[in-house]
Image 1 (cartoon, one colour):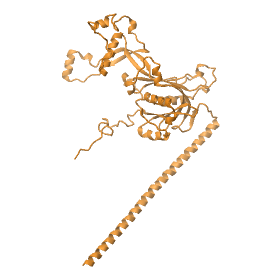
Image 2 (cartoon, one colour; image 1 turned 135 degrees about the horizontal axis):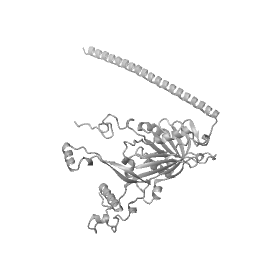
Image 3 (tube, helix red, strand yellow; image 1 turned 60 degrees about the vertical axis):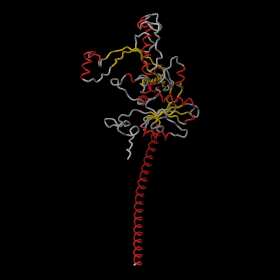
Image 4 (spheres, helix red, strand yellow; image 1 turned 135 degrees about the vertical axis):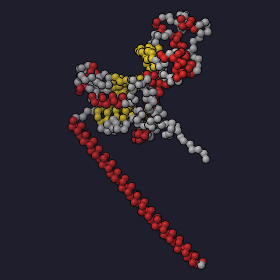
Length: 437
């Protein structure tokens, strides 16, 4: 008999189960997951469709980058599947009848929802075309970006009536944006895992900049996406070329970028001779790089577990100081933009997932009486909804009881009919035996 097959890659098994018994998809270890959707699919246009793809790449790895939408899909289809898939945020792009591009950022499953109007945006391909030396993705998208937020909380001073949004809504929007990505710990997070930066810069309200301003100030956020590039400092151009060629040779097994040393007798001539092409320490300016900042990074070498014999040999030859030691290295940090660029203007905040009580609106303001009337309307809706659920639950229970009783009655009737058939068969059998005898 053939041995039964056990699926270990896609099903819960020995390979997918961790050592402490926690499943990889459990809520204990699951981070934020976003679903970037274009509502209406083909109706939004090719530019917005490409913008959605760029935003999905920006939200990697905690998003569905290969999601396929249909024109017939509705919001209910995505909210139904968001729960089983562990989705925590919904980013819904749509286009209005007037041609405006809108973005809804909803916190699943209970809300709230932030409504934005996309005032301006630039795609990743446009950003790359404008740069002299663009940078590709590669391994940068294997880890979540570092979120940097600026000017999200307005200063306390100033007239409260001139705020673009209330103070508690500023805190709410800040919390929602912070929950888009997993939190990091400066003590335990390795620096090599931080490869990208997502910058959210809120434009300073005019009321805080100019005290005499009486116009309403919009809540505008500028989004920028950068890649972090670090290079060692204090090295000449030739040594940097050798280091880059060594990395290329190690990763891709290609000799592309190696300097030509065929006409030199020694590598020292390449490093020390000022006339060597690409080499030599001719001046201090050649070792300087076009950077945004300079930092000191402590390289922690992982200590290799050695046997007792290997440890003694290593101690004799090299010494214990070279195993697990730390050394500070000065590195240059530069930010290279990846795209997209988006300018968002908040227009509305509402409770629930894309449907609920409006907490704030940019263009509409209500008096105290209107707010109280709206509260009464929503209380009535909540009571009606709770009553409908109660009646529906009672009806379902009645149907279940009725179905169970009907099944019992049907079983009794079938059993009685079977008994009658058995008795008739036995009587006919007895009659045949008496006739033959």
